[in-house]
Image (tube, rainbow, N blue to C red; front, side, top):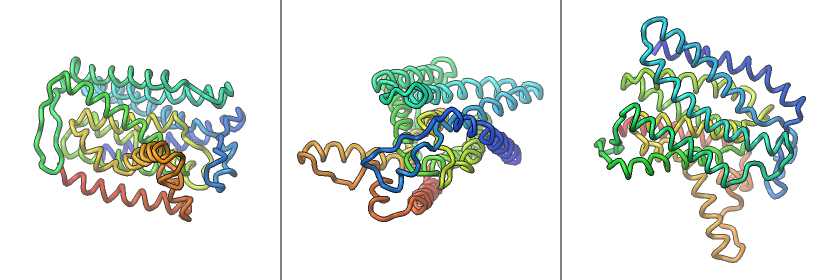
Length: 327
């Protein structure tokens, strides 16, 4: 535990330093947020706030994990280092797809950004690559833990691969939808990844406890600039990265079903969008929620941004405590 705390603090420090350097650069490049006209009116004053801040987390994770890997190799733990790098590459892969989308929209001024089909194809390629790494190279097996009843279930490989790919795609998109209020996606993700890291520490899965500690430190450092009123937004660069971190760790530890419990807030955010779209089409233009995703519904119901973040974070914390006791 002492090791993980030290790594977290190092990652946090690097993240704060990186944010201090990168955010002014984003301002100079005028990489500003574009707010929806039909959204909460309080969001209109965020127009122009630097986004693509997920670069801060990506850079931090790369620097710290490479540094930790070099140290592990020197002390004779090259096997752990060799497992850390592939997880880093995959999660950064998700972030890079978000970066391309952000870059096209904000730097090249292409309002449509990356075509949804191309975006999904990119996420699919990274997801399939990670699942094949788990099953064919790491030989991690196809069993998963069923929470609550605490029983392992082994899936046939032809079912496990599409299931695991679905988990990766669904989680990245769920975190992406959760990102819409200052500090919301970062706070919720930090709590979820902390929960997964604690599970890894208890299970003695060193590569994941280290990776999770680095990720949490990077998120908390970024959160220093992302809390209301935000000085920077993470953009798809950050939200897809965080979704990748959560789903990759869960699949690696064979507990993907736990995501439904500990990441219930992002799950509900996703369901709110689906319900809104279906209801809108079925009723000829009526809305089930005042606005989707769910956090905007609460905003339009009179909740302040800070209240939404606090409540959603508390709910996530409680669900994580429940989740730890379900495995």
